[in-house]
Each structure stands twice: as C-alpha cells, then as structure tokens.
Image (cartoon, rainbow, N blue to C red; front, side, top):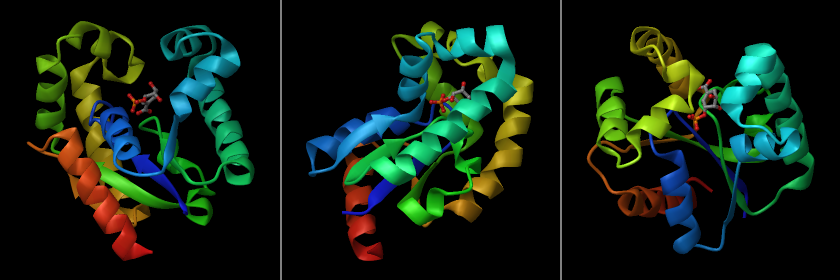
Length: 171
Ligand code: S3P
C-alpha cells in the first residue's frame, strides 16, 4: 500500500479521520506534530514560544525526510503547514480535507475540549490572521493534493470511508 498523506487546515479533523481510517483498513497511522513533540520532548506551543516558527519548520523538514525513507503502508496525518515540504508527492497519495473557514472554527468551538484545541495552536490564536492564512493556503492545498474530501457536516467515519474508496480508485 502506498502511503497516504492527510493535509488541511488546523482543526479540520485530520487526526479524527486518521483514527477512523485505521479502524476500517490495514493502514497504520502517525502524526507529524506528535513526532516533533517526541523529538523535542516539548509541546508545539512551547517550541513556537521558545524557538520560533522557522525552527519548527526545520523540524518538519527533518520529519519529511525521515518519512520518505522509513515509512510504508501508513496514513500520515500532518500539521497544517506540512504540505509545503517538497518531497511529499514522491512518497504518498495526498488527500486534502477541505471545509470553509467558518465551519472549521465552528467545529472547534463545539468540541468539548474547545479551549485547549485553540490554545495549543499558536497560529489559531488570532482569528483574523488565521482566516488570512486559510485564504492564502486553500489554493495551495488544492494544488498539491491528489484527492479532495469535503468534510463539512460529515462524520469522521464517513470521511474515512470516502477516503478509502477514493484512494483505491486513484491507485
Ligand atoms: C500549524 C498547524 C498545527 C501545528 C503548528 C503549525 C500550521 O497542526 O503543526 O501549530 O502551520 O498550520 P494542526 O494542523 O494539527 O493544528
């Protein structure tokens, strides 16, 4: 099985969809932010605070190089800016989880742990600049992806099933 890379804006539900894919297939899953937190033994928020965004992006680059050489049969869930890494196409089918900005924010705010979800994401603290970032990134997500899934008003399970169907067709 070729790897799958899940891309999309912060809070769109990449982790939830990844867990459902694991339930309904033989794929394993890993998350680039989790790998970075393990490498550094600190939370993403702390890394941004202590060392800044550029330092974090360099860690993402290191992770992408490792993934390319070492990971197979896996759905790789990524942080919202990971899609910029240059080697993704060569190692995976790229799936973009799409939803309008307001729907993403609504989804986060309705989550029982909403406060924490917002707090742990440094680039989501200021909603005005987050929306600008969304508007800038959405065309780039579309450009780099092989498959697009509109996740608006769909359960993670429904998205996972749609993903598996589309990946099979794309192969
Ligand atoms: C980022 C998204 C975050 C995390 C970091 C930067 C981004 O991941 O990697 O805070 O640039 O969009 P999630 O997309 O899982 O929130």
